[in-house]
Length: 498
Image (cartoon, rainbow, N blue to C red; front, side):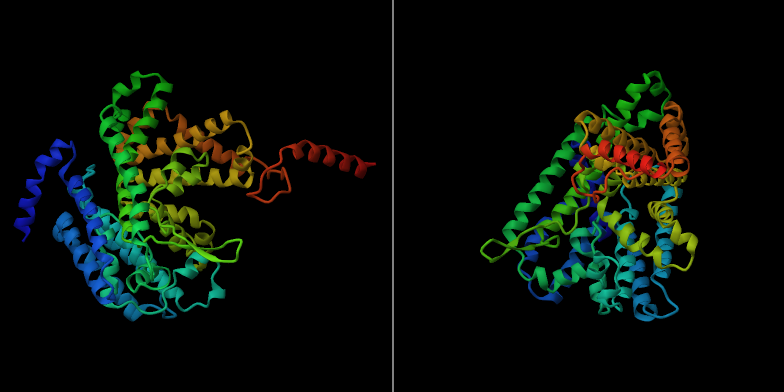
């Protein structure tokens, strides 16, 4: 069988070459596009058992076609999770963190093998899907533990709605992990939604097929647009130029322009994959998220939405002035996993140091999850500083006031936030420490120094800012009250002194 798979892959090489695409990336796209006809067939299958088997077999076939026998490593992670849930979960001495750590170690093996044999290589390998498998399985461990809680015990709605009460069967666990619409590149989604989808319960009892196909077109067209931009401009704006000596011959402001455009174009190859995988899961109905509305006549109407999950928010990344929002929009489903199944879980740990620094530890978990290139840890530490700067500016209502300021100021602030993310994003794309160091030297370390100085100023030097208005966050900000409040405070002080 393996020889047949290899021969078929080799026959695709001329097509991939004509499209100026590496063979492994071309096969990845073929596997994702295969999810669409498979999703159409899925609408005609009503038996939960057949739906589970169908999703498992087709998903394993796609994954084997792309990753071959390396999928055994994903199987090992599934077996570890099954044993944990079967024999160790919900014990007083046990914790889902144990499962998370073991799964991280299992994934670490893949990352170490990649560094040894493919150092600095961006080829598609088993780590791509094993990372998503870890998200699914570790989240299931926490959600299954949540199944013992009453609804009143939850501090957030997300964990309450995603809890898993019944023990997953062997077939459910394997089908959830290998399901065809996320078998080769994700995205991550919760087991509770998957189970309702398989058994056609609650919102999935009637999935509007035509609406699902229609809504999937938006993400599909967006993916094609990203593909067009990437293929046409990747040569003109090669992100690897920033670490070469000739890049230092450019003027500083042209360097800023170049690295931002290069990173935006480089990001398109991620957007196209994330939008394709999102589209596939909208197409088969898994992302179905209807809303019930009552009209003026008192009649209940159903609003069809397919936004239960979305792998990326491109507009938020490009046009939101808040860098924190940009970070959340990038690989959004993994952000959801990090937020609800890592960061918020640290709240319940016994160590006060971890609890008080849970955001920093979450970034460190993310760096381990991504791999063991040394620059990853520098990269995620810098992004932690950017995240904290954004949080401190949010508390100071900076972005709220920005919404009511001039468009020119909004554009400038958006560019600064976008530049911060793109500048650090290039670090991630370069991979090796030598390349990153040359890149930072070419930029004279100026953006790095600006981030560190701004963080030190906001965190340790700037005094606690006064409230500008008494309005709640999210309400329209009335800037006309600023001058009046300041004058009133002066009058009050004078009265107290008299």
